[in-house]
Amino acid sequence: MNTSMVSLKRVSMSREIVGDDRKRHTKTVINEVSLEIESGDRIGLIGRNGAGKTTLLRIISGIFYPDQGKTELDGRIKSFLDLGYGLEMHLTGRANAYSRSILDGVPKSEREEFVSWVEKFSELGDYFDQTLNSYSTGMIARLVFSMCTFEIPEILLIDEGIGTVDTYFQEKALARLEDIYNSSSILLIATHDQSLMGQLCTRGIVLNNGNIDFDGTLSDALDFYNRDK
Amino acid sequence: MIKPRSLILSSIVEGRDIWSHLGWRDLKVRYSATRFGPWWSVANLSVIVLASSLAVSLLSGRSTLSSIPKITLGLTLWTFISASIIESTHIYEESKGLLLNTTLDETAVVLRLVWRNWIVLLHNFTVVVIVFALFKREAILKSLLILPLSMLTALILIFPTMIISRLVYWKADLRAIVPPLVQFTFFLTPVLWIAPNSGPGRILLELNPAAWILHLSEQLILGIGSPWGYLLRVSLLFLVSFLLSEFVNRKHRSIKKLL
Image 1 (cartoon, rainbow over the protein chains, first blue to last red):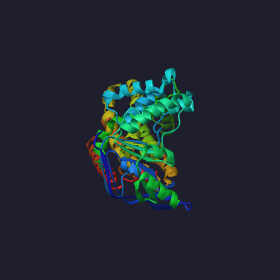
Image 2 (image 1 turned 90 degrees about the horizontal axis):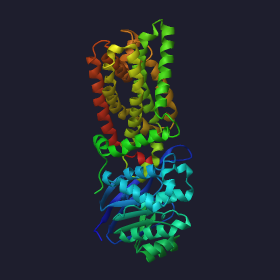
Image 3 (image 1 turned 180 degrees about the vertical axis):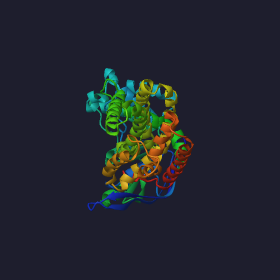
């Protein structure tokens, strides 16, 4: 297992929200959060909707720049937030896969391999060369899942688990997920599914209004959250 | 270590794979159901050039043949400028999924927009070649100068498109104001009319950066006057645009927070 790490020092971030009065209001979504994550950590992020879980994941993955504080990261990172980003319904599965390889920063020399892997893993057959308009929801889910799971990252960030796929594909998908979960040296998952968290995580962090209210073992964190709820 | 926001130049260079791909993909999607793809844009421009030239000759008494090369040059560049500015009002909305799920720089999104419109301009260049082959054969080689000039225009456009695309998030009403404003500017820019040497028409030319670019294209390609003065102006415009883009990129890095 590689040595990877994530370090956040007094990180804060505010977002502007448009109210009913059509005026912009500034809301602090992450408030002076400090966090040290090391190789081997499997963390469940716990909190109500709007607690700042997704924003924190976006800050760690470099999508958002915090207003204050310092973020350090060592290791190849991958975040599963909205898995279907960048899909174009008017393009074929192959064209979408190629496009995703560019968006995900896959080196030019590996893009064909990426597309072949997606084609093979998704088992879409002839549909792979048809536009997404002709796909069922399950087929789109297969394509998206395959595009997301090509690479096994060192640091894996997941928001609300991975969407459902059809029954036929489910077993294969779950096996691949197991692989990824087990091979990533750091796992950070934000979900309301406490049983999934129980299967995957050992450490729990409770977020509340952008603050870390608790950081400890998963069972203690869940007790803290459920008691406080 | 998470890198800080890149400067405009590094966005252009480091993100070139992504913005160039997205620009191409936008056009593929836009014309996916059509047989002739971006050549529809060429057909569209041809009709507008023809109709405008006829209208101008009817109104001004000049012959259609003499006005058509100038109008073609003007409309080719104006279409590029206006499309880039109008589309900038919704480019972040269009790219929201990418911006919120990848480390894609906001500048890359603006570059995507300018790039796709430049590809359309390359197609539209066919109209220039045909018009010059028919009506201004002696300047057909010089008409190639529209390509470097349009590249310079593209670099200049990065700044206004970046500013407008950000401003509409602070003041949503601008989204409705920008298209008519661009339309209004069209009538103030000597695309269909010839700028006089003095008077209010000349002032409009002197104060209008879009007019400088158009006027420079006429000077370079049609040989109307010495191009050096306007070349200097357009070069300065590029420099100022570049510095302002750099400033905006450094100071206002928070557009993702507004999405």
